[in-house]
Length: 469
Ligand SMILES: [Zn+2]
Image (cartoon, rainbow, N blue to C red; front, side):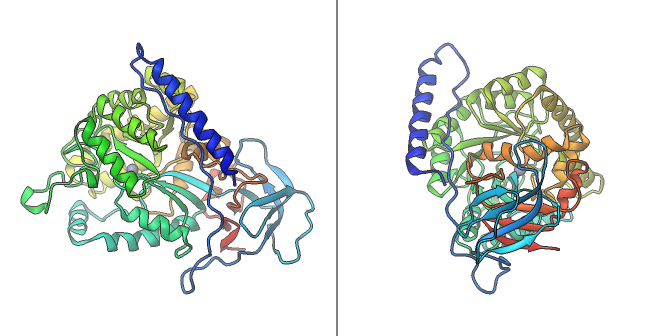
C-alpha cells in the first residue's frame, strides 16, 4: 500500500503539472495530458461468502516454493526463488530459501514459472457473443440489468480462472459497477475491476446501442445517463454522471465501430472539441480517458485532446504513431478480436453491415499493430473479451506474438505496462510490497506464449482461487 501522504503529494504534483501545461498551451493545438495519480489497492476484503466458488486458501500467509520468476518488468527469468505473501495479501519477500512462517500455506511449484497475475485493459464482462445477429437483437430486447449482472458474475469467474486478476472494463452499464463492488466485497470470485460504466459517445454513434431500432421500439432515447451526449456541455454532464455513479475510468467512442449499425467503422464521431471537454472534465476528477478509435482522424483528435489510451487503433499511419509516442499515449491493440470478428463474419454470425466492416478493418488492424510495435509506442494488453468468450483473454497475447511481438514484450504488456496504464501502483509486478497476484504456468511462456492460456495456479490478493497440480 502506498501511504496516503505519498498519494496526496502525487496528486498535488499532478495538478500543478497539469495547470502549468495548460498555461503554456496557447499556441499548441494539443491539450495537455493531465497526469492522474496512481491508486493503491484496498487491503484484502473479508473474503468470499459461504456457498460461492471460494478461494481455496486464505487469508493466511502463502509461500510459493521453487519458482522460476518472471517478475513482469521485462528482465530475464530468475529460477530457484520462493515468494512469501503475508496474510493481508501483500508480497513481503522474494528470495531463495525463505523459512515458512508457522501458519503459512506452503505450495511447492516444482520449478514452474510464476508470473504476476495478468491484466486485461479492455474487457466487457457483462457482454457475450451471440450465435447470430438476430439472436443478439432478441437477447437485447429480452434481457434486463439483472440478467446482465448474473452473466457478468459467471464471466468474472471465468476470467479469474484464466489467470487475469485485474481488468479494466471499458463500456457497459451501471451493473458493471455493481459487479466490481461485489467482487471487492468478496461476494463473488473475479478479477479486480476498474469500470467505465456507460461509454460516452454521440447520438447515433458507436456507443448508441439503439442504432437501427425504430423509435417506437425505444422506451426513451438514450441520454447522458446512458453515455449518449452531444456538444461540449452535454459530454461534460455525461462524464460527471458516470463518475457520480462510480466510474474509475472514462471510455469514449471517438469513431464508429464494427458491431454498431449504420456507422462507418473509421468515421470520426465525437468532435475534437467534445473530446477536449471530456478529457478536461475527467482530469478534474482524476480519471483517465480511454478512446475507442479505429480511423486515423478520430485517433489523432483523441490523442490531441489528451486521452491516455487509444483502443483498437486500427488505421494508424507513421505521423499518428509518432504523435502517440511523443505524448506517451498507450495503444491497446485488441488484435485477437480483429481475427475473431473476421471469423464471425465468414460464419454469418454478424449483420451484413458489421460483417463488411469486420473484413475491411481486421487486416488494417494487424498492419497498424506491426507499425506501432516497431515504432516503440507504449502497448498495454487488452482483448475486448465480451465480443468473444470470456476466459479466452490470453489469446490476445498469442495473436500479438503471431504479429511479431516478442513473448517477453507481450508479458510486459499484460503486467507492468497494463498496470501503468490503469494507474495501479501495486499490481503487475512480483516484488516486495506489491499485491500478491500470482499465476503459475506449465511450460515456458518466453518460448511459447500459449503457456499462459491455462494457468495451473491462480492467486489473487494472496488467496488461491485455482490449483491444478
Ligand atoms: Zn470494446
